[in-house]
Length: 308
Ligand SMILES: [Zn+2]
Image 1 (tube, rainbow, N blue to C red):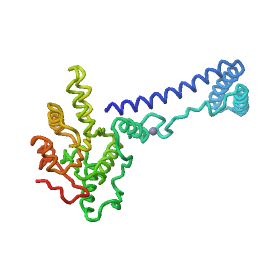
Image 2: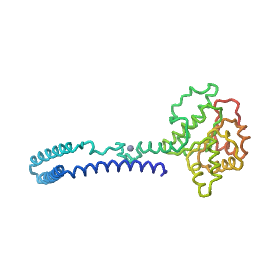
Image 3: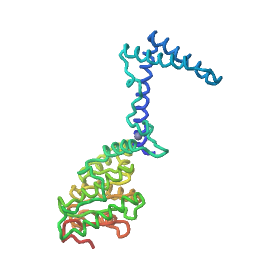
Image 4: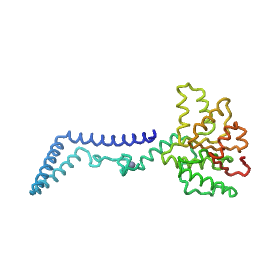
């Protein structure tokens, strides 16, 4: 179970216990009242009498009538004490699963939403909360490039359906500023997080500073810095190539990262064209990012970006 799901279960359990605790305290308060207490004892005795009489096929109508009167008297006393019936009812935040997180053995939507909120909070900045890959409007696409966009979104939908079992473990999206590269990947990210997968998105400047932090960290602290990059089901490196190359840091750790995420999905966007990106990094990095079998590359909004 992911740590976010564990947290979500704990959250639900805490809601459940808090609410039960509240009602129990109120019941204790009621029973500490002498009048209410004796009415309640009377009610319990009457219930036992009625059960006995019914089992002996005897008339219990008098006891039934007294029982009803006692209940009314109890309600009146409750009112006098300033406690309403509603207050004594357990209010679950999710009536469907009664805050257990499960309905008919299946995870309840409230649990999924709690997991999603946690995943979203740890994901990094995404430009949209949209998660629907089925109803993409292509109105914003330049008409001469619409086929690329359609291919791109078709691929994202397939990714979502097959995730995490995807053949394209690296997805690269090239194109100028504002053509919707990060937007598309973000829709996929939100879509996957709604299914409980973890996504971590950082831009290349953040990536660089994380690498540097890792490089300079004490040995004992390194894992905490590195693990979020490796553990997430999908990693988005946004605006790759815009960061300055730090000697012994940027390229070394980027290569490590790509290697260690060999069996996971890593996406990147770049405003540079492929040639410029190839010149920016050493060949090993570029060839991993654009590997024939493992990578899928998309070019949005531009005509002149070529990959050889
Ligand atoms: Zn629920």
